[in-house]
Length: 227
Image (cartoon, rainbow, N blue to C red; front, top):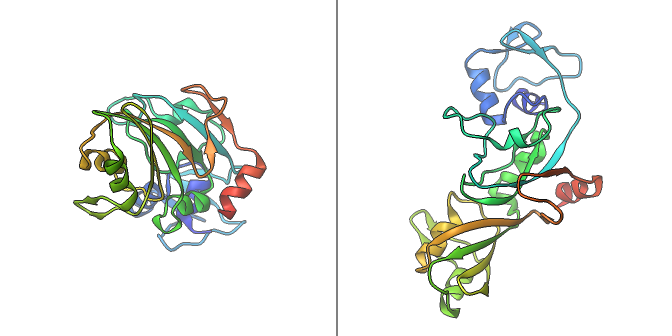
């Protein structure tokens, strides 16, 4: 297992943050400074800032993220974070990101390999959003969303879009660009006033109130790995 994946599995940090710790010389393996390409075996001893860390049991948590909470492990500005809403042990990190004002389905895990796969654009994980927007989108605007919208970082992939009611749109994407839903709807003349992710990778929020979470069932984990 790569060193950054080991640290993610141990709940120390995300893979990206783990890379930063390794580069800063704060991680040792068997007493020697770890490198980005270091592979950790079952008998190796890993320490961060001199404190030994170990693998934790794999854990998968679905959170109904409320508004006003940031999708990060810790926040320099002291804002509440998503990890504060789930039981502390074993530690988990969020997969992907939701804006602070966006609510909905967020997966947290210490399974670095699965998290990397789910977050990678190549795998096209399905994400379902419900947006409240300015105005009331007509069929031509919805068709533009389905066909793909030209944004400043390129044209979006085809999406599924349907009207749920006046000023409410459901959008299903297989991409994960920054602020993508907000940018797409603004591009067709309907800026978002409120955004909720109702589904992620086949997981829904049924039975979960805002701010609450649950552990995934083994069958759900298997589906995520197979998807």
